[in-house]
Picture 1 (cartoon, one colour):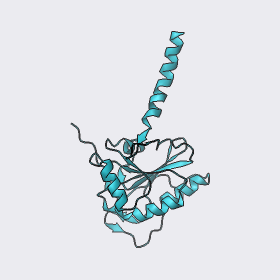
Picture 2 (cartoon, rainbow, N blue to C red):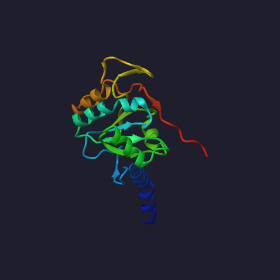
Picture 3 (spheres, rainbow, N blue to C red):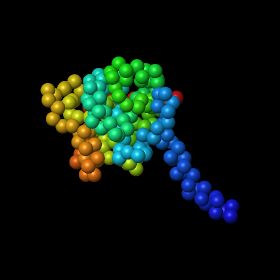
Picture 4 (cartoon, rainbow, N blue to C red):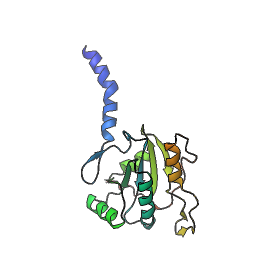
Length: 186
């Protein structure tokens, strides 16, 4: 019997620890599982930076998306060792950003989803698989080069396809913005 328990522990322990690592506190300490959305077809993680002008320009579009896709969890992730819960709250309030605020000082959520730019959107499906990674839309064609008219709504299109049970036409594309900082080695 002890051998059977040891085998069971060896098989299931990694799963338990992996599931536990998905729990992430928001700025108020409430636990969330952004990479394992329960009860929803998907979750949206928007990686933002307080001091990135391109992130800040997208605030009204983020508010529109929040209204349009109110049934989906929306996580506003601040992947930066310098950002505190207080500074994330201040930024979200100042720019009227709706959603659950997550601070990612060790850049774990960004690394786990391969996000490298702020703003960058990541959509995970109901089983936690990344099904979209890229820009919110094509408002910017390059750093400092904003289009007069936004012609592609990558994130919106991905979410509507996912909700309709269709495949996402463009599952990954390049986001334009500020680089997510790397942790400095000590």
